[in-house]
Length: 162
Image (cartoon, rainbow, N blue to C red; front, side, top):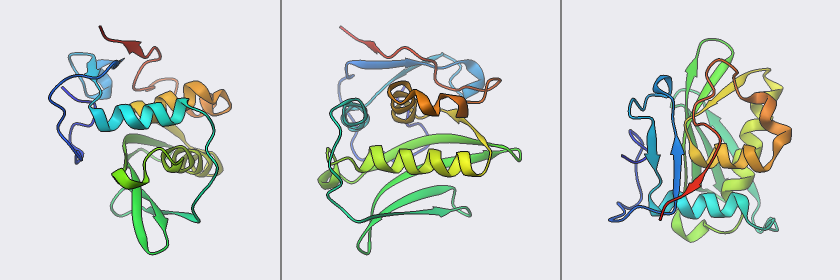
């Protein structure tokens, strides 16, 4: 089972990656497991890698009707972070995706940072079903207070698979 269930995948990986995340049943994964596909692994590598220079004039737009924060460069949507609204004060962050030609350039990192800043400005919390967001928060603990205590989503502890 991939973590990105229900969200469009840019490729279907034939083999598992070196990353796995544990999910509690309330996060929507009754088997409490999730293995990243290759696209997701590339984005996890980005958010834990060296800081990237901002090479693009990036704009982030929240499309509340569709439940997605879009990252826009020029007039092109290059990345997105999908979410569901849970009550009045919580967003469930589902999946982060970046068009392949824009990967490894800090787009995912900057998109996640801006989404979390927006969540904080709205005084909301998040449930992280997206392993890329979870990894970002693990490496940027100043955002840890945004994780909903009752519904955290993906649990800490990225592991390497053999």
